[in-house]
Length: 253
Image 1: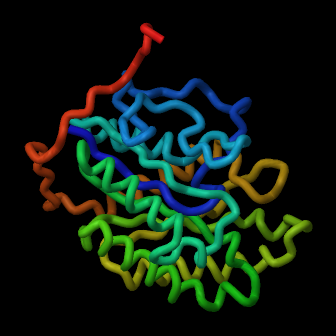
Image 2: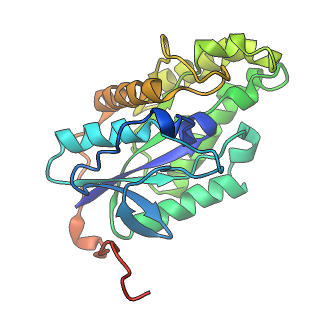
């Protein structure tokens, strides 16, 4: 049996942890997977290659923590985060929204959706955007659950880092606290949803992206939040899934 998580949002969800700072990725003996071309592969970096400079991400430690507490299942990640994107680009019917839905539906042929992980907001820190954040994120997540026909799927959203206020090149980021407030309120008002604080986490030298060590910590915080809303009554019927044999080598090429 394989349980998977949909990864959506912008660059800090895709992951910009420097690969040079990272220890070797532990795939739990091949139990950690990532969806590539609609099929499950043993997890490898970068998990969410949205840009040439993609790096480590919080899904690594999150997936490992889930696997440790669910020894009878493999754990998959469906990477659909895209750097530099605003909520407007994630609304229902957009390319990013449809891509996330389509990739999830492919994954659902052979696995079970266990949750949705979201981190986004830097792109909406401008004064013309942040007042609408709560309304827009609520509409997006409601539409996503509806499109996936799963109104009870857990959603975990993460706060923005305090280091954003120190990024001189992007003065609008000083409004990050408004995004955090909206994300917290969204989690409070939405069933099966949790908010994760980024307090104390640190960044790469750019004061924009979480560094590798903080991403690993953030992933563990995401998992703690997920456990607080994980519904043990959600039943997964494995008989309906198509077996997907992992491709590990293509020696005939």
